[in-house]
Length: 257
Ligand SMILES: [Ca+2]
Figure 1 (spheres, helix red, strand yellow):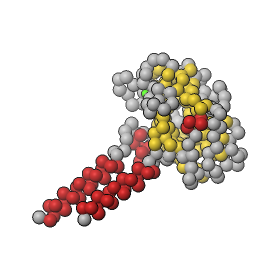
Figure 2 (spheres, helix red, strand yellow):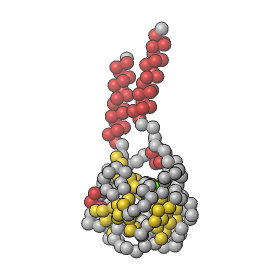
Figure 3 (cartoon, protein in one colour):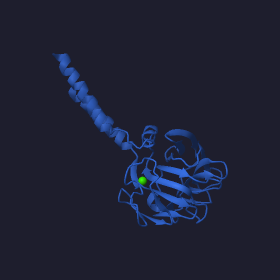
Figure 4 (cartoon, helix red, strand yellow):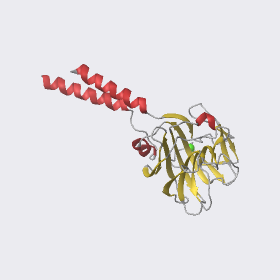
């Protein structure tokens, strides 16, 4: 009986782990000085051009900074080839000052020929859009993500499942839209991945604050994104599963008496 319970738990842990999204890059901007945006995973440090540090952050706390962009700043995190994952999740906090034109918050291998991935407000209407291109005109994708309020922090997530070709957009932990794409994402790997702009141009850059950019290989779940929007993480499955197994074992011991 014990063996059966433990084996079931182990298979559940292994099963959940096999599908978990993996954090590939993380930019918290907590350096407070200099022009290097350190990748918390040690993977891909970014180069800050023009953006300034601000102590206005979504989660607060001492030693926490965000980056402030004034319309011609960007953080270049290098070749999009490094982040061209078929299944991908992006999470970022934004605090916009101005969304009266198209602006880039985050982009990987994006160009105007319907390729790559970009998140940003759509011209004039405060509507947040995620675009995932597969290289053809027909299946270029807009994920309308709802209202992006000015001068306050919002948590944004975009996921793309490269198996089902499904894109989802979340604002403050709540899914706002879902779109089916015809094909997998096609990235322009020769273009840079950037924070605060588009991959394929030096215009249409962000005006406002950005903090805590995280890029995952794989699809983050609704629950994970909901926790992330409060600045926390879902408890490790191994922890709660092993606790549950321990609880069952103890209960059985008492019942056997
Ligand atoms: Ca920060």
